[in-house]
Image (cartoon, rainbow, N blue to C red; front, side):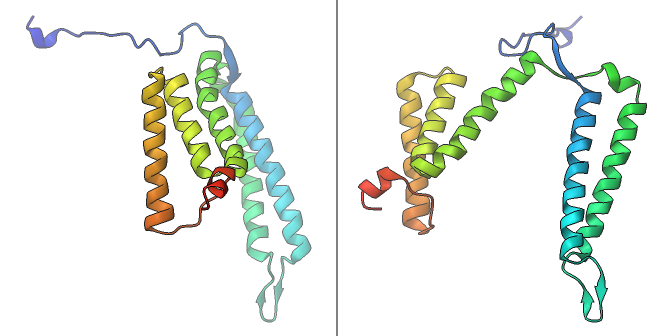
Length: 180
C-alpha cells in the first residue's frame, strides 16, 4: 500500500454530535411550510379578488395576474400537503437535530438582532457589534482582534458608502453626534 492510499481522518471539533435528538422530521416541516404557503395563497387570493381579478374592456384588472398566481401557489401547497402525508420515508427522516438547530440559531439570532439594532443604532454601529460579536462568540477569536477587525470593516464601509459613493445609509445617534 503506497502512502497515497492512506486516508487521514480528522474529526471536526465544531461538528454537531451524531446522537443529538431530533427536533423535527421532514414530514412535519413539509406540512408546516405547505400550510403556511396555503394560508399566504388564500390571503393573496382574497385580497386580489377584492381589488379586481377579472378582465375589463381595457385589459386585466389590478388583481388579475396575482390572483391566478395565488391559485397556482395554493395548488402547489395542496400538492405538498398530499405528498407529505403519502410519503412513508419522510415520516421518520430527521430534518434537524437539536445540535444542528443550535448552530443555526447561533447565526440567526444575532443576525435578527443586527436588523433590529440597525433601526436604532444605525448601520455602522450595528455592523461593528455584529462583526465583533460573531468573531468573539462564534469564532472564539481574541477580543482585541475582534474589535480591531470590526472597527476596520466598519470604517471601510463608512468610507465606501458615505464618503466615496455618497449613499444614504441608516444613521444612528453616533453619526448624529459626529455631525453625519
